[in-house]
Length: 320
Image 1 (tube, one colour):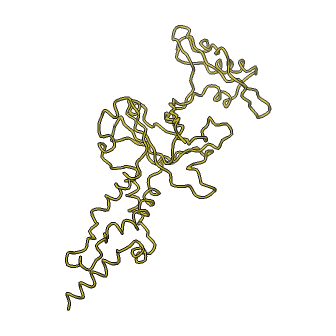
Image 2 (cartoon, helix red, strand yellow):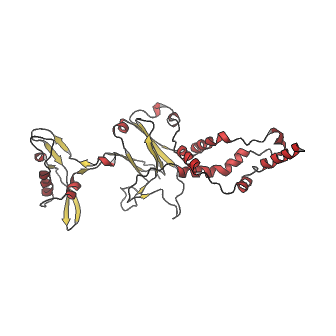
């Protein structure tokens, strides 16, 4: 009698997994705990995945190279699914197999119910690199005014001495039609899910971005902004030049009108005893003369002399 009741109970439990609808009815709303979603999110961003799984052969990423890729959705889903495999053991026991439909695969049925939600939650919980300009919209683009549709992930792996020589590299990634080069367009920065080194003191970094990139800027850290000149030849009287931006001043408004052509000679603004030190008053007078005004203030001086950070741009001509 006891064996018969147990057999019926086992069969009843097994039949609960007979279809996705039966599983959904018993589970109700699926909610992935935040700590688990966070762990899976890091896995979704390939954090902790061994390097040989990312670059199986050194010939695919030789020194001083960059490789762009699209993250295979099926591969990532298999990766997340594998994280659950250690606790998956839903096969019916041999003594209850006769009471369970032959087509029943409890693990497969449960996966059909849970896996889409788990995968979606892990994507949302993946790390997000929050370095965006305040004046720019953060993508991806919404669809018909609704919430953003799930986007495929793209990325690149960079192996170069630049990675170690210039710590603090940054990246800005734009979709097609929304770059700083598109007149009148809304500038959109795609969400960067990962941008870090593949190992301590490594010369290789990985970037993952949500959405298809078109315009990619890899640049030095913004804090390296500095005053600079264009050419400098040392000597008792150095030879130095600077291309200045010309502007007009009307009240509190400054209007940029162009650049000086040829560049302004500023070698005589350096100290004779210390030819690497510039006399700022003399340099300011040169800047003012180039613009036909009596003097310049600190803001105008910064406008003229500040050099942007080094930047390399890649354009994906096949982007849609």
